[in-house]
Length: 90
Image 1 (cartoon, rainbow, N blue to C red):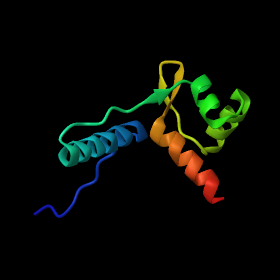
Image 2: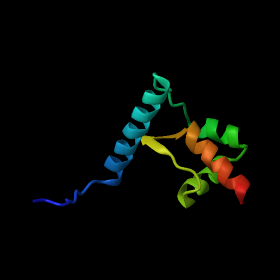
Image 3: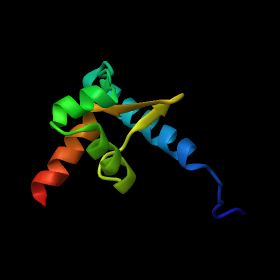
Image 4: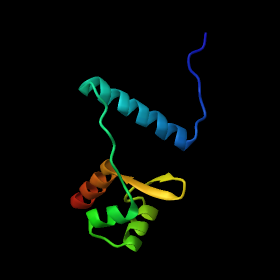
């Protein structure tokens, strides 16, 4: 009888699994999935009213998370909102 098992996954695979689970949960609640909005570095800087170098510093410190598509860094609306909320609470 097997009581448990371990599985090795990469951080990227874990992130994808979590995204799929969240999307599935959102679909069950609302009936239709909501579209995620992504912004470029320049658009994110305009939203946050900061410079590109400041945004790069925030990414390096982990204050805001970016997703990479090729060489392009994209920021989701959710991640921008979390960074703003985190900053307001400090």
